[in-house]
Image (cartoon, rainbow, N blue to C red; front, side, top):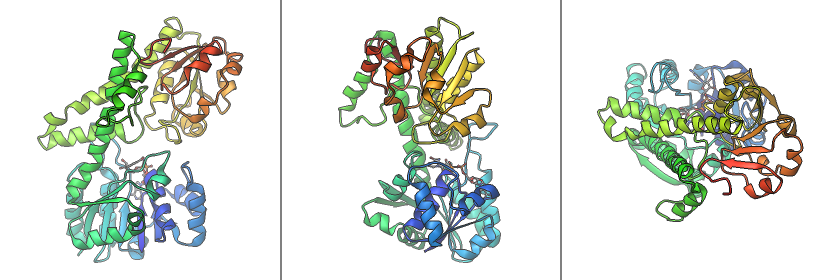
Length: 437
Ligand code: NAD
């Protein structure tokens, strides 16, 4: 099948590449000329496991091409996936729909009759219906469907090639048949398929993210109580997670969630529910958000206590800048937020990350960055573990102890094995665990 993928950021690049990999003819479109030139040369603008190989292969095969022209896209295909950003509005907690509106208006001028516009962006419920009306004013015989994206940064290619489920929100049998045909090979491989109306599909995405965010904030709230009571939240998490009704995934206590999705998605969902008169029932999402931000403040406070009540003149080594391991994305990264707060409060901060240093440097140019863990930790009064990269579990604590000024570590992700660190002479502290835990 022929299709366009409009917006070639994290979602669009991966979607375009994977659709070409499963045999479709794909035109990726973006307004960012540099990004399109990079992609057309077979180079990925983002880091994701497996993406470089698939991109090179699909571009070389001729099945994947790139353009900056929506007019060309409308000519090329009748199925158009829209993957542009829907960030938080600068003036409120609601979603900023200006990019998706701009694409719709521009597409409307060029679309051929019989075209299907499929939104993948995360949007407030009702957006598909609104865009459908907008399109219908200009373009004859066109339809809008919604197909929310569930990929996780860090495993985006794997998630797209082997999805657990595919959800489509459609208003006609034609749209459902088209989307079934797009995903045929993935459905044959076992992905669950949910076909529903567009409003339900839009809500599935924000409901899923709200549930996951709630789970994280729940366990982090438990972590603070454990700290106060001298209890161990990691044992608590394992014990409650052993109940199959609860499950142990996403029950990892620590610095909390960030990135370009969860924070803005739960805020936008609450804002949209309020508009619809259903705000009371999802007001708990404000608490989920507050508890999450509170973990960053709690980490800064704990770090300050560990350095004797002040950061003045202190050197702090920060391990991790990306919002989660496996990704180079630093958008709303909890690690960078903590690093910035420490810097602001007078600490000399050096940051390590295996993949996100370019993005981190661009976001926070005042900090010092290095790709070398010993260099970042040299002379440090405190080491902060803020992103759970697997590399950090391979650190030799004894060797690192000889580099730092004080072997003092705060594991704000609860993912380092405390025993070897303590055996090597480190004072290891964690969120929600007593000193010996
Ligand atoms: P992104 O910011 O990485 O990419 C958006 C792209 O859209 C950019 O390259 C931008 O130049 C392009 N764009 C903007 N206006 C355009 C226009 N008029 N025409 C063509 N291209 C245009 O965003 P993302 O992280 O890929 O997220 C896209 C959407 O998917 C968002 O709604 C997000 O909430 C949702 N989503 C993201 C993830 C994720 O992990 N990043 C997962 C699921 C869903």
